[in-house]
Length: 417
Image (cartoon, rainbow, N blue to C red):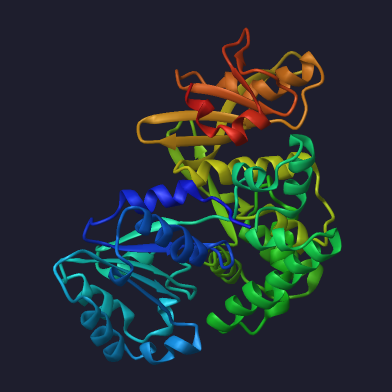
């Protein structure tokens, strides 16, 4: 099955010949190699690039094992650039070559060589990856299939596709499996045999039971604030384990560097400042999250919030959790100050969007409850409520844009309209 990844393919095409190393990063098994070796190579050929000018090396294969030696690799690539025409180097699993940063930076001095790489070790599973190339790297972060990509490949009815997606997520290889049992088993194995082993081995973790316990807590708590200090106290009092606050923060960073989870910081809207803790954490793929919990706790509201977060991040938004102070009249006719949350504060350049996710708004009272945080924000940026209950996009009497989940996921630019 051919799965289109047009969003990322366009990013690669737009960055052609920009004199940087194009770094394709992202969680393992999300389709990085397929994007580079199949889709981008095909695009180059469609653009008229001769096959002799496309240099492909996959360092994880036995056929290219000799090129793990940096000197052998460098000399091979230089020998392939035999004329003045533009050449394209597509390099997979670059971390398997020692001193790859120096080699690739050296190759950048070849004016008619355009370099594209993928990798799967800590240097390529970190948000600091561009620094490895001394400012000459251009990172393209690849996610598992978003819903639009999944729906285009799967077809069928929207409601059935959404049910499947919010349960099993968008790891591309899931299309190989037909039964629910096989899909679930694939995700279980992927988590345990690939992601967890990578993190434990890479970071020399000895207390892997505590890491797994923390992972379960994080999976259970999507959409809820997570405080490392309180978690440390809970481990001490409930689990009888002395897992310190710094260690918990370090483990959370390991999970982020492996692109398993992402952190959404709290942002004080009125105070215009960040609040360092607690934070919210969302899973890069909702299916992996569900598999971690053995497909328990799969309420639509939590899944929907996680999927919306990923969609925004994938399209380049900086996404925070909004925090706003309000003053309310109490039942005994006094006034009290309290904090309420806006699900997402999404920034894109100078533009900002306040977004609430609601799995259902069956009554006017429920809609008012969901809109309450949005209306507490007094600036002029757009306020948006995303819900499966909506039909056509429309503004209500309060000036809030009501978007259906289907419309947002299939047309994410609809928040701009």
